[in-house]
Length: 348
Image (cartoon, rainbow, N blue to C red; front, side):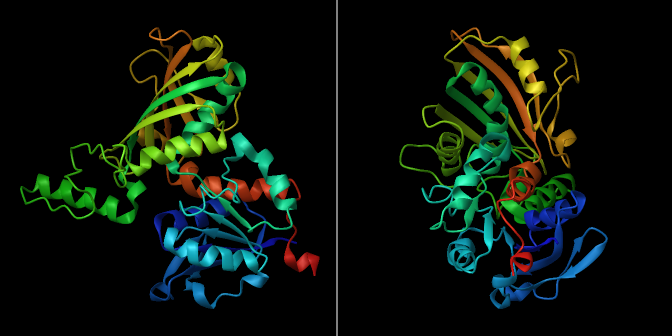
């Protein structure tokens, strides 16, 4: 007997990706329901070769639902996730709403799946598990095996984040501005504070008092929560005119020595990682090639001679998949594979 699954925010970029991945991975679901706000009721979304009609979130009975994949933003999650969890349905939330709550685990299965069993066994759990920020997810997948080997002390990361990280509006703006430039029309800015077409914007999310942006703060706090609170992290997050996939230039300092060759061997055998690292033109992965793929790609691995034990590398991943939809489904799969959740129909 399979599980009953609800996808909240099914009409958005990540919600649609969730439906696609559930089908691709043959997720053990007897029923999948697409949910969104009342204004989207009746909209058709694809689930494999099937078409689902979107239903209203506020009218759905979650007491008969096993897993809710929540991708409708922080405001909706703050209101609905506790209510859904109280009905005995496990919520895996893609928003930032619950990531920093001490009662809620923040999970990337390749990195810290071990936190799932004690949480699911807890009698006072909220029934909410948080998905990290897209830029954090791929970073910690690459850092985890290196940390296990040589113990990371400090990370300096610069991100090159695609416009899909800002949702459909971000993708539409890049498309619209690019067409305007080629046709010699005025470029309108609605989603981003400056022109994104043929440009870079070193500003994602709001600015904080210390000069960092909220996106940069998220990478710091989330890396500590998922991987190790002792690691020091500083980030510079940049929006780039790419539709899908985030890229990161990463410098890592270690407590113990580690060579570039050792790092390559470790990462080649690490879960979720795929090393493409030929020191020749084209011997690396770009955002275009990572789009639609599940792996976190790692290239340009080299020793950093400016610190005692340092490495530098290039990291690319599809932000809609590993950074959001895929990671959420992998969390659900990890819970099911560990037999931490039984279908309600079976329990009845």
